[in-house]
Image 1 (cartoon, rainbow, N blue to C red):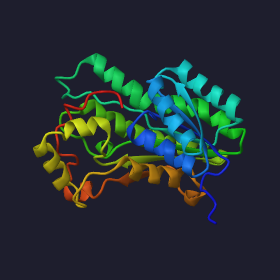
Image 2: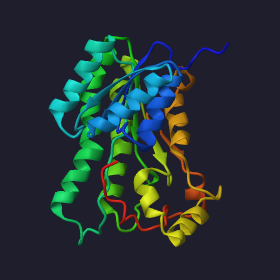
Image 3: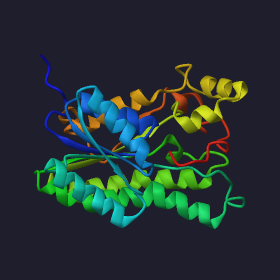
Image 4: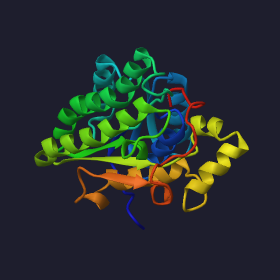
Amino acid sequence: MTQPLLENRVAIVTGAGSGIGAASARRFAAEGAAVVAVDIRGSKAAETAAAIDDQGGHAMAIEADVSQAADVERMVAETVGELGGLDVLFSNAGTIRPGTAVELSVEDWDLVMAVNVRSVFLGGKYAVPAMLERGGGSIINTASISGLHGDGGAVVYAASKAAVINLTRAMATDHSGDGIRVNAICPGTIETPPVQRMVANPEVMRVNVEAHSLGRIGQPEEIAAAAVWLASDESSFVTGEHLVVDGGLRSRSPLGRLADPRPAHRRT
């Protein structure tokens, strides 16, 4: 029988209340990890943890705003206190606010940069010392193909995801000697709740589907599979990288996601 990829490991997944985070939390648990499902919506984190427990896994839920230092410090401390350590951090929580540089409010700029970028910094700040106690670990950050080339109408989202990619590289360089690998995932258009609202218009769905060379948009479970690989020893020689999982969106369209993201403007 094949050994589970994450057997006896402790993993935190942020933004675990829905979409990529929920799928990843479930997949991590299926691969043997004890999972901490974290979300700003505590009830949604609890739903994910309960679903894992119902399937025979081991999970706990934490309500936290990962843009706030005290919450992230508490998140890691509670994980270590309850589960004995930390091996994997999937910093996945994120948000989007639409607008050009002219249209976007300063408040929305600050919000997106805090949720998408400061959270990754804070995750590393508090997770690395805990991982050192276990002799190393893996940090995975959710970036986006939007961080590789700017999307129209989403200036702060594109800027934040570019920052995540380079922050990932810098953290990988800083902590490679500690046995801690740091990588990012750059999804294409994935069928998460905000995207479902965006593509509810049949024409928007058609444009998105045609933009991907595989002829469809992606599923959260497909990003979860990539996250499990990066969390596991199967990727032991990979650090400082951004793994593009986009169904051929970049190869079909050098400008990336074609649909206007403006309807999708809630925290995910």
